[in-house]
Amino acid sequence: MTKHAKKMTTNFGAPVPDDQNSITAGNPGPILMQDVHLLEKLAHFDRERIPERVVHAKGAGAYGDFEVLEDVSKYTKAKFLSEVGKRTEVFVRFSTVGGEKGSADSERDPRGFAMKFYTEDGNYDLVGNNTPIFFIRDPLKFPDFIHTQKRNPITNLKDADMFWDFLSLTPESIHQVTILFSDRGTPRTYRHMNGYSSHTFMWYNEKGEHYWVKYHFKTEQGIENFTRGEADHMKSADPDHATRDLFDAIEREDFPSWRLEMQIMTPEQALEYRFDPFDITKVWPHGDYEPITIGRMTLNRNPVNYFNEVEQSAFSPANFVPGIGPSPDKLLQGRLFSYHDTHRHRLGTNYHMLPVNAPKAAQVDNYQRDAFMNIAPGSGHPNYYPNTMGGAEPDPTAAEPALDVSGMIARQPYIHPNDDYVQAGDLYREVMTDSDRSNLIDNIVSHLSNAQKRLQMRQAALFFRADREYGSRVAQGLNLDVKEIESLASLEQEQLVEATKE
Ligand code: NDP
Image (cartoon, helix red, strand yellow):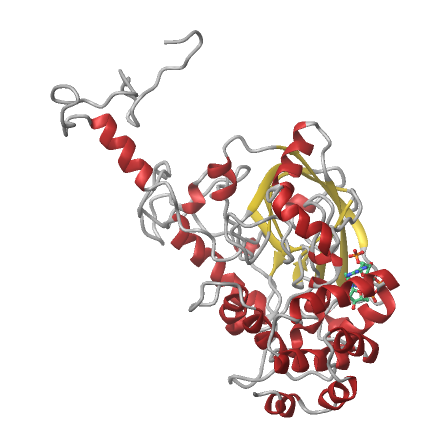
């Protein structure tokens, strides 16, 4: 053994005498079955890869803490938010969405911004993105939407026709498409972007009074984006640049931080709001609900084992703690199911026992038992409830407030007086600078020009509906007839689809 070398063992702890030469009968000789170290090594290698996440496959993560800066106890009884100065350990995973595990960090894509707060009431996960909105509002559309970002099943190539066909048939996507094709679609690093809950959630206080809230984690490094040219260059210069940037910043103790700002709405205000407060394709304009700063999250510790801590980390929007609950947002309701389900497939039934996923400040105790890879210590009580054997009891004070709901049970199309285009138009006209708008048009034209002409026309008509200038500039960039796009834009959506069928 070389000086200071550690002892090599089998997976069962027995010393390995030689890791260079298999056991053979004679020299060179056939290898013998009795080389159990060789068999174990090969068999384990054969099983090294676990299923890749179907979305958010490429990611980077780090630990840190969240500190409360403002008293919010009148809105929520969540213990980790209960007093100014309180700190809670967090684990955060950033990611791209559509690309495979080996794809480039600088791809145009929303970025995942998933947070796990290890609170004394159990783990609270906030599984957000770097955009305050999303492409679709019904989870029934999610698998199709993602398929359009993946590879064509026939050619195994990314396919601009699939991408734009679906989006142009789904007008509620126009707001998110506008953010995605702005330079915010290619953040410079994970440190230089915001994180948003995107969904509306419920906060409730000790009295059971509830509020609707949105979370905005604002980067304290400042927003910085790549232009399309810079992002494209980075794909070849360093496809892992954002992963590297996060790790290196934390190693040199340049700890990234985000200020948590909240928008808070009462149930009465929600009833009268001009937008549907649960529609994930819309923001609550800051002028309507001014964000208030309530905390700061800082990342200050790198994982030591990427696979164990980042690849096996698993977040779910269904992980709530008392004081926080879901809203009627349809997409959120679908996600409450999907995340646990996909982790059970990817990591196994007991994925919550892996150290990165297990509560750190709370004890787990219930009557769920067994299954693959169970490492739970015995609870010391029976495996059924109710019992009179001293087993764990539910805590009624953890109940969410009751909400009144009524309506027809049916598959109902989304109907709301505000259309899908208003906020995309506001963003284009009122928020973007001239250079933001130019880059947006250029980014769209460069991608949409790869799609069939009829799809270009259909999508240009949607941009036109958001803003006349926006649609005209896209049409001009694609060498389409602006008058024709204007007349397509004036059609009902079904007529537009009919007119651009072939
Ligand atoms: P405000 O002028 O109060 O806020 C606009 C916000 O837009 C900024 O604070 C910033 O959000 C964000 N923003 C700035 N540049 C860009 C860009 N190039 N691409 C995407 N977002 C950008 O306006 P309103 O609140 O009335 O919203 C107007 C529009 O701004 C919305 O329709 C929406 O498209 C966009 N927006 C609004 C947000 C909100 O929660 N109200 C959040 C993000 C975007 P931030 O401070 O979060 O970086």
